[in-house]
Image (cartoon, rainbow, N blue to C red; front, side):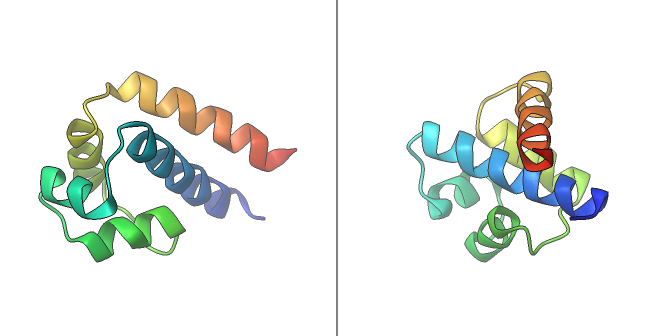
Length: 82
């Protein structure tokens, strides 16, 4: 897997992880982030090239800080490398 795809997959896994930990459906997260549910689905499947603005909306909707989010992204990236 190339480096860019690893990052996309790590972000996807991290969004899904925090959404599920928050007991939110994709629809609920989309509403809180002011995004479409199909966009959230695409992000979680790693098929959407998420913008930084949208990522910030998602992180804010999940009520976590950026450092926490990217710490989990780092962990997910390392797991994909193993």
